[in-house]
Length: 221
Length: 108
Image 1: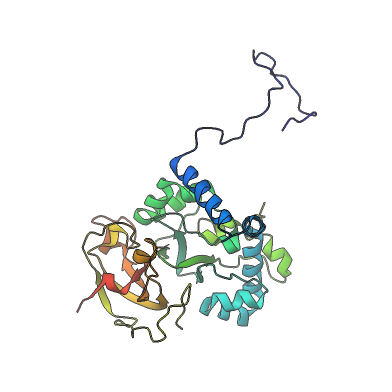
Image 2 (image 1 turned 120 degrees about the vertical axis):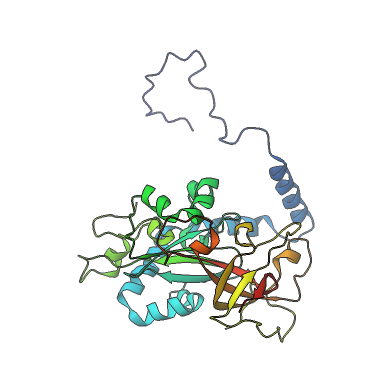
């Protein structure tokens, strides 16, 4: 979209500086994009789904963000009974917080402790706890992350700035089937007496994937 | 706790063949089409960590079949050193994956 406040100091281009911005995906549609469009059109035409239902579904996915997962983590940090339920039956715990994962795949929570550091990956595709964290980051879906995390988790974590000492077990979770995993990070030092809201502010997306550890001074964007 | 993403039609799913702690081996066989058992785990030994429940079979669901009979899904824990010929990290490092029963063989 044209931004009138944008300072055009790159007038050395010989094209029209006000040419309409193309869609980011303006290239030729892939076979799968064509297929998706065709199937969607059929579903609408046959009345299996309505356009409103599709829009509502997109809206639901878009409404999910790491802030939601962070709230869950902060509650688990402050409420031992909730934490116990979260680790045992994540669906039930989320329901208690008013978060309905509906027909989405089953959820499981894995807890980081001084002895175990967990990290989540999906080597087969890009399964991700969307109902709690929203849309996955591009790197999570990359072949590099998906393949290297299972072979060399410590090397990958090091690249994220997370050094795990040798006396701590690194446990990789490859979400190969019907479960989606979320990491319950360790509550960092220096957060004694913090409110749930303040605690939630330091739970970043990567903490819940396992590619970061929560730190008192690092706030979620 | 037995749960399915979509309820299996069978009201009495098969009793799980394995229990937590059982030593298992992932079948070393090829699969045609959609399959949720990753190649890098085939033929590898591990241990049943827990039973997730009963879920419709993805190898059938992927081809517009109902995915029945529903299958028992396990969380299987592997030692990294048992998966890779060469793993540089500590002996205690592990990997967990969710594997359907018909991909698991008993190990003594």
